[in-house]
Length: 267
Image (cartoon, rainbow, N blue to C red; front, side, top):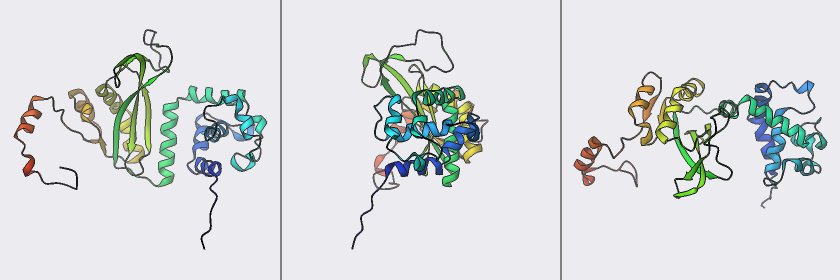
């Protein structure tokens, strides 16, 4: 006889949030003392994450309506009531995250989660991607450390009327979990993005996770990037751009028939 089980998505996400230590990291990084506050940053973010499961397109002000029929004592804390999850409290939590630095906070959360999951990634996969966003371009304004410039012209679809922003990711190879997420200017190139991440985050990955190798596409293979990698403790795996004359010479001399397949579908 088979027994059916009802999966509670709120309970699963709430349990994962706590098991990975996300609330603890946020409260510690924003210097929150749960004993002195009715609602901590970790609890506010947890409420918005749970709300996003079913009402991701709804306004933040509707979070109290979402949780009014939800047993917050189970998913949040016995002392958190739906009325406390109001727009002002959630907005203050987001302001504190912004002040602390969302990229830095994400790295702390990822490091804590990896440690609790017992992940010891040897390889860190680095890549960047671009996507278009809606809104007014701010590329002509004075640069700010906390504002990502939006560049007009979406390269991927050759649509000059769309605004572009870039995202840099480092993924650990065991569970495919992003350990670094960094928004970049839409004007930045892949080579520039790789050079930026080499200077600090890669060394932190070696210290925090024990990562030894960085795997990236041909954008990593520039004189400046390799010179920046040399003094670090990270090894690198990439490929030489096929546009280089030396690479073209080697490719022209290669005999595909003499190549031995490593596994099915690869040469």
